[in-house]
Length: 299
Ligand SMILES: Nc1nc2c(ncn2[C@@H]2O[C@H](COP(=O)(O)OP(=O)(O)OP(=O)(O)O)[C@@H](O)[C@H]2O)c(=O)[nH]1
Ligand SMILES: [Mg+2]
Picture 1 (cartoon, helix red, strand yellow):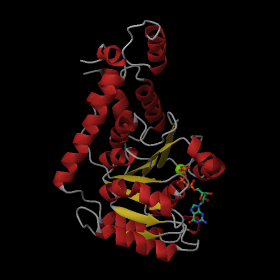
Picture 2 (cartoon, rainbow, N blue to C red):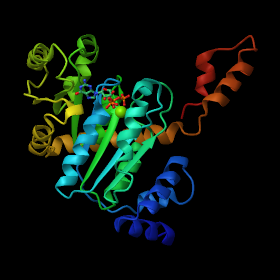
Picture 3 (cartoon, helix red, strand yellow):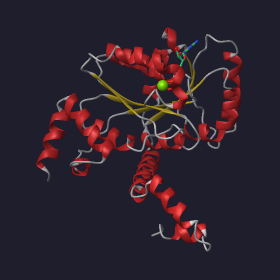
Picture 4 (cartoon, rainbow, N blue to C red):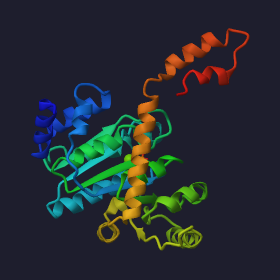
């Protein structure tokens, strides 16, 4: 066993946030003893609360409210989110910074944002590993925020013990587009920005949609106005009520995580810029065929 890895894990267990930040950087850059470290992680269950939903729906504001509420109860919390400088989050940049600032001096809150890769939002490739690392620390809850765009919703459901889908009254079109994915992954719907017109009608349309879900499950709907801290206690109560994942769901989650990790492992030697260079060279030849070209990457 790698001694350095063990000493890092021990520090992290004792609540050393500097060591935690250092190891997260190792994981992000895939350097140092990060693989040894991941392999040495103890098996611990810490509830992971996933928050997803369209850009600007209020996910960070809700996460912030949840931190406040949990801190009042003396809980320790870690939050992972995608960097607010992502293309989707420009409008929220200042808001995010101001809010996150309030927790910088609290040793019981750890916030880490990842630079978003590409424009699709969703799960950062390293979020699975970092979440598992956070479980080895001293936190009572881990909150993971991702922008819900297509496939990433399924990914977050594989990572989180409970998935909160945040929607806003004006999301009429979004909801159509996201319908299939949403039903599959939502454990709780949050209708945020209920200070805006149309909230009740919107809630009725979600309730209607719920009926057509494959499992006919009664997904709870919680109304919030995150900017006024309204509905947050109800939300937390609902989270606690719905937190225990069924065994078959746990197996699915683990499979989803394993799948993501295997996919990442398989493609990590492929660099898109290099790929472009290779293709640029290859297409100069008359006999270029994309499928033959791709064949060399198969195995
Ligand atoms: N009127 C109103 N505005 C809200 C409410 N909750 C959040 N907002 C505002 O909506 C904007 C976006 O909020 P965020 O919490 O940053 O949203 P987000 O979903 O995290 O956004 P991204 O991370 O960029 O996808 C901010 O300006 C918030 O102040 C609410 O309940 N009512
Ligand atoms: Mg956000």
